[in-house]
Image 1: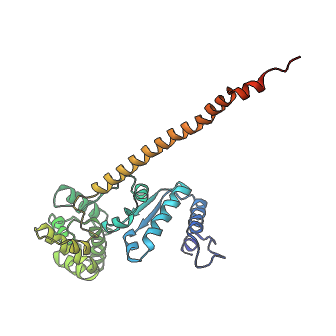
Image 2: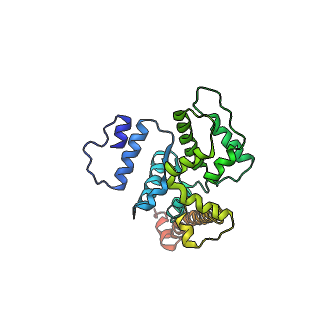
Image 3: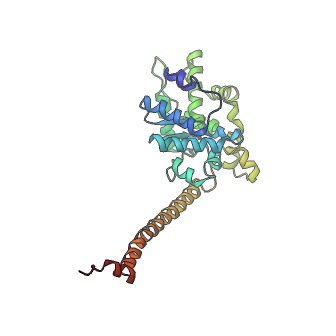
Length: 273
């Protein structure tokens, strides 16, 4: 129904509320191919963990969709989705392309400053506004360098500044935005501050903040597991191909042996005149 609403199609007509996975993938492929979709972007994929039993089916659907259509899938997500995606390394290899771009939180420095300057340059104000020199540091305190939170905070900040016609951002503005529109991020941001100050967390506590807290080894372990799995898969395929070649050659030898057997030789003798 959502696809029909967006594209003006009627693919859902006559379809019941329950369909098989294969039929659902077929309908997706038909709708996207008809509109020449080049890339399927799935945002907030980490939320599939909240629905019990849905995650594995969802991952299977995405992989089947890519196989049937050849359209790549881009997941916009957090570290929280890793256990769901990596439960089956075959699916992980397809969805993570033998790895994945990792965008950890930025520390203070040139990279962070450049990122904030790019965000500030997109301001919608009708007048020229110069970014205060200490603004990157102010924004980092409220976001701990998490790019997603920084982007959302800048959007809310621009709204606030446009409404109040105050075009010089202050710490008080950011405090107000943090406690109002971005309150749902505060537990994770607080946890990142504690980690940065050297406070240790238990495994259970880390699971509570798995959206923003990067795994200890980043994504290197996942990437190495996928590479090992793919290497074993290719070795197994090569062995299967060699075995298949041997099996195909055996009937030829057996036929030759039968042709050279005494009975066959006798049957090939020319009849006497």
